[in-house]
Image (tube, rainbow, N blue to C red):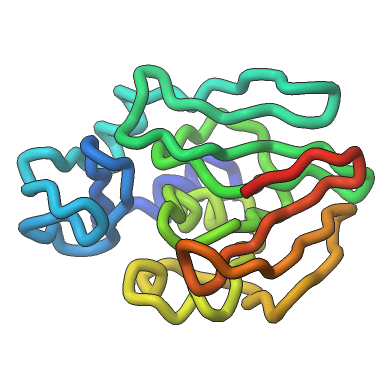
Length: 184
């Protein structure tokens, strides 16, 4: 299916809201307050408005790593990275804004559940698999998002080593790329 028709079929009668105070994405009916930061609904924009207003802009970190930053800044602007591994491109965490012109990835690995961003839209567009630790996947903030593979403990995949360390969320991982870069 052509990219534009796939997007059109997916987004017809679709509701997703982005909190401009923190960047959290909410799927379905617009709530009165953001479930993450408690901002009122006058701080929300539709995902279509977010796509038009906020451009996810790649900033090269090194030959294999690019940081994905929204311009202008969207909410708390959590870190999201594209990594070119020997096994294909993946993301560590996900931007809050959906931009259909980004280069596809095979997988989106989350370090924690707080900002799953527009992962559901990128997953649908690219058939990318979404990974999240089981302890975070069962949290109310994450349950509205599709998680294809729940992570149990440490793992190695796509040339990335992930270690379960716990932390400010029950499923916090840090991910270590073979070249020594650490992502929290």
